[in-house]
Image 1 (cartoon, helix red, strand yellow):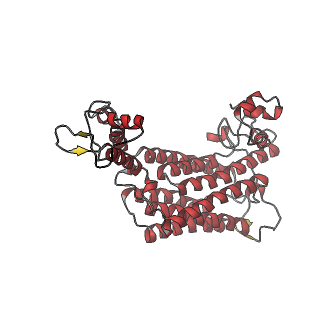
Image 2 (spheres, rainbow, N blue to C red; image 1 turned 45 degrees about the horizontal axis):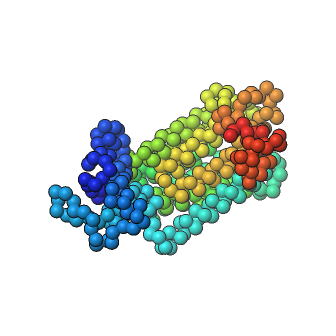
Image 3 (spheres, rainbow, N blue to C red; image 1 turned 120 degrees about the vertical axis):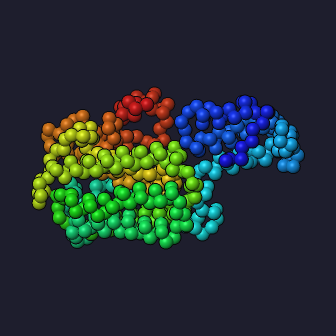
Amino acid sequence: QSGAISSSANRFPPKFWQNVLIRKTFVFPAAHNYACSLENLLCADFADGLIRGRFPEVNQCSREQPGQGEVYCIEERFRSSVQTMLSLNPSWKAFDYGTTHFWVHYGLCTFGFLLAVITYVTQAAKPAPYGKHQTTNHSFGPLVHQRLAHTVSDAIPGIFLFSLVFFHYGIKKETTNLLFYCIWLSHYLHRGIIHPWIMRYSSPKTPVGISLGALFPNLLYSFLNADWIGTADYGLYYYKDPCFVMGVMFFVAGYFINRYADLLLRRLRAEDSSKYYVPHGFLFDLISCPNYFGEMLEWFGWALATWSVAGVVWLLFSSATFIPRARDNHEWYTKKFADYPKNRKALIPFLYDTQFISELLNVSLNVTKREICHQKDDTLQPLKRFI
């Protein structure tokens, strides 16, 4: 499967890694490929060459394979092993280096990363004027229908653009690629079509600038992720890989956390009511925004499963939106409701609260862990609690 070659010169008995990893434990096929490659890398000849600082020439062979009458070069075996291990990483199999497609994709990924940074800085400075923080200021443009705005900003990029790029421009339609397509659509079919029309919003209108501010980033990140999963050659059995399985588990867990949190929020408000209530039950007993936490968990699982730069920058952008928004919502609840539970955090259970983040932002990013531990300044106390 991986081109691995057993040898009596290996440090371990023949088939050692395969016996341990495959026959005696339940692991995924990717582990077998790594095991075979590792067996080659651990051969005695390779270790000797590493110590001496040189390897035999490509066509100069050090030892004949016992029982097969074939000759193998240590350097060739080393190269083959490295190539086998690298081939398991899908990022090596998506785009040919140096092509226009390569530079366009990763250029847009770089732009997506910068956009995530800008988004975090701007939203950390001042909350976007929608939902709990909506104002009568028309600096974000005229008001438009809330439900329609959400449908346009989510359904067009997440469903229609994503499907167009995947099916029209994508070149890979293997099982794994199609599974990724279905996973993405499972989120956006609900987010873009169902969610806007069943939620009970505090206001029927929202500024058009907010809608456009969500539409254009969604267009960018939907294109990047569709471009990736439509092009990446994951192989026939990547859906059995640990990264895929763990990523999907995180995605599914986040999906249901997000949906159930939205359901509880919907039940709090009567139809045509703009009044707010303190939510209770489920993760609301631990954090103020489990709906944001669930969606962050979804996109963490997506980034892990796809093992892609596109997935990571989308996770960063989502987090750059949810983290400051959760902080602002938490502060809003504590100011509006005197009896708001003091033990609730903002976004991450037992960890993320507004006091810690506010104090953390006042600390220089250049302060090292050692300096923090020996620093007497009271502003560093929040960091000391977490080190």
